[in-house]
Image 1 (cartoon, helix red, strand yellow):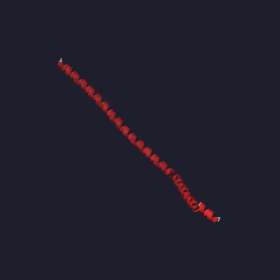
Image 2 (spheres, rainbow, N blue to C red):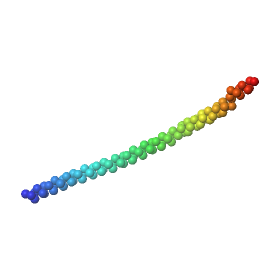
Image 3 (tube, rainbow, N blue to C red):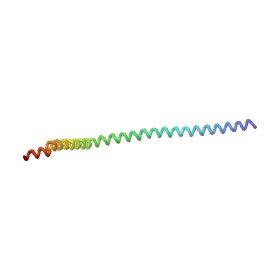
Image 4 (cartoon, rainbow, N blue to C red):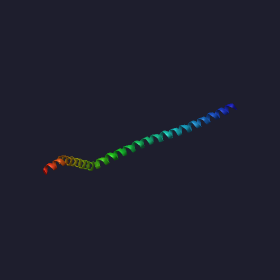
Length: 94
C-alpha cells in the first residue's frame, strides 16, 4: 500500500514538473520575443528621428541663418543708437 502511494506521489510530482517546465519555457520564449520587439521598436524610433532630421535639416539651417541676421541687425541698430545721444543732438543745434 505504501509503495502505491509513493508511486502515485512520484507520478504527480513528475506531471507537475513537466507542466512547470512547459510554463517556464513559454515564459522564456515570450521574454525573448519581447526583447526582440523592444530593440526593433527603438531602432525604428531612432531611424525615424534621424530621417526626419535629415529631411528637415535645410529648413532648420534657414531658420538659424535668419536668426543670425536678426541678431546682427539688432547689434547694428544698437551701435547706431549709441552714436546718437541727446548731448550730441544738442551740440549739433548750437
